[in-house]
Length: 217
Image (cartoon, rainbow, N blue to C red; front, top):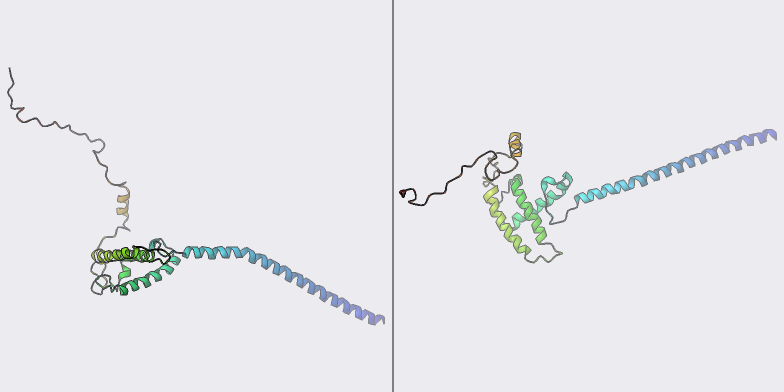
């Protein structure tokens, strides 16, 4: 009986050890899950802030001005396709010809892109559905006709035969000596005599015949 009892005691001791190991594993598992929950809670606000920041960065009110050189790459990637789609719609809707806007290279002309961008944003503002536009659509039509005339007269150069040709001009940006000369000028010349210069007083003209009169004795 003693030998049998000793055998059972060893079995019970072994079982108690297994139970203790399981309990320790459960405790470690609970502790691990708790630490993971804390880390997730700490990282959640940062992720939300990042998402909100990206959404704010991409937020753009239709009709608001667009300055391409001030946009971030992400903003440009969102707005440029919208602008291109609108420009293509404009060209077909108003039956624009290559003599007015060159189909093959309009996006290569910075001034032309600026003109079309202004037309795009002002069109959205003029036709805003939630507001009483009044005469804004008509004024936009007038602005379009003037812009088309100005584009052909000022910005296109010789891009009228289906081929793009760069305009022959000297760039204003990128030449350091030129920039230094302009920066050191401190604005336009001031009016009036320069410092150190003396003015010669002018004698008013004599009346006719004064110098010819003989002296009276």
